Image (cartoon, rainbow, N blue to C red):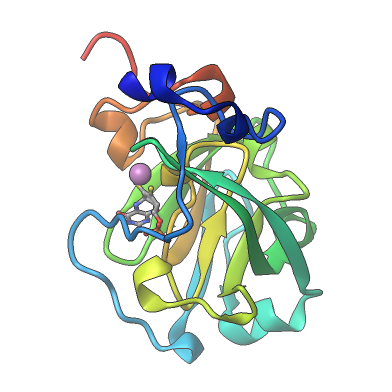
Length: 199
Ligand SMILES: Nc1nc2c(c(=O)[nH]1)N[C@H]1C(S)=C(S)[C@@H](COP(=O)(O)O)O[C@H]1N2
Ligand SMILES: [Mo]
């Protein structure tokens, strides 16, 4: 809260810094539990639920068109980092190869190690969302979700599941790991959607 009062005018960066956030040039690691170590060639992203079941291998993912994007990221623990550069497969590119069944409205993202986080399809299928394997032009470090993580830059960074392993399509919203533990179901940083009521 104090940050709100001691914020310098230049911290606003032309509206790029959401309320309650402070800039960092570091890249903090935030992981709940142990770090899964998966060899790239063993990475698989499995699709199930309200979609035709299929598995994308590492080779499948690298054979898709690759996109490099630069944008800001915002963690619910109050740090924001500007101009981060990621390379990978955009979610629309991946989803053009997924056959959804009627009624699918949400997706539960699954990670190696058991982490989960929920997204509406509207928040998931966006041109800036990446299944990223490179950060700043180098292979993504294991601590930051390598070999491959999701990046959803318009929501708080807990939605950007590291070590992505699966997509479970659903006809309703369900809380993932942090959402069950009090975080907001959507998590828009510019709306300060940090926590849910009623916990
Ligand atoms: N699989 C997995 N993904 C995760 C997490 C996690 O604990 N496990 N933490 C989330 C949280 S709370 C944040 S803020 C970001 C942190 O990413 P970083 O460690 O690369 O900064 O990853 C998110 N993705
Ligand atoms: Mo976080």
